[in-house]
Length: 373
Image (cartoon, rainbow, N blue to C red; front, side):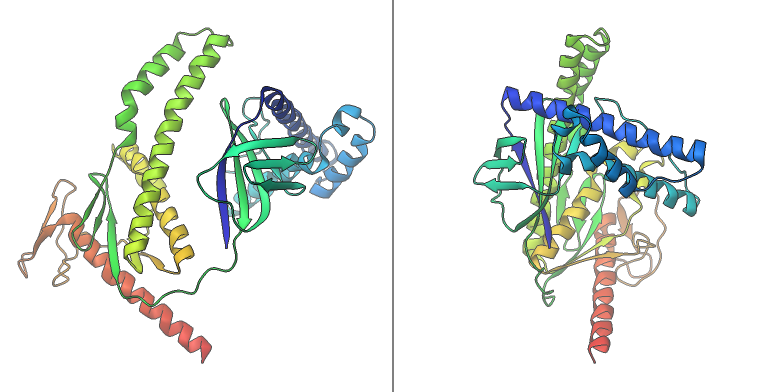
């Protein structure tokens, strides 16, 4: 089971200069590798592979002292990124999607690098070979065997994401307590037992500060130091929104996983829903995808079930008799003309979602038993 620990680095001024120089160097390598592939195909009609560029980098390091001063393991990271970018490009071409040819990076847009080896964590100190020792701060105790670490620049802050293997996931528990959740905008989630989880609307809370910061930024001279300060102010507002949202969804997910063995939710196409109508901003602010992702992470660690179900007719169908009762978006109450059931619209949908989730789990158990026999 893989887990990622997020740590706030506290580099000294000298270390910040070194990290910024490294990112600038990696940006040059990335653009050079992209230009190499582009020219080779346009002029010679030959593709350039990852190992070709890796050998070229090794040869180049022997001729340039400046390039040799940076760790080789980190210098290979831009080459791996280029390779993944082209693989994704050809995959989209083959699938008939919008291709999106890999683009060149600017110094301000290349903000992270990966370290795959020669690093260690000791207490509150991160040691990276040929870069130095970095103090960090984190809320969680780091456990497991280290895989890779990603160092990212976020404005004036430096973040480290440490990927660890914490062992095998526990076996799935038998279901003794189940719940269905219906995700929404008015409330973040409505449970099948009638409980409602509030939607804090983080963007709406910070709209005043964000608008003021953006107005100040718009008046600054392009390329000036004051513009850089104003950009950092806008970035801090967004970081506060993201941090508050992540903390809230984590708290909600942990609470639900602690109470229930099975959680069923709708399998929604969130991206398509956000592009339709006037609710896109509210849907993205609610962060349904983040909540579902967090539920899956916590369920895997606890050995519990999170089941996505087909959302078709979960709102229309009566949870009492199964009769389809059409509703407009403004109708917030379910009133069944057949059985007389009256429930909140989202509460009715959550009960239907729970029933579908339980049936899917039973099918999975029957399939697993058949395979075992």
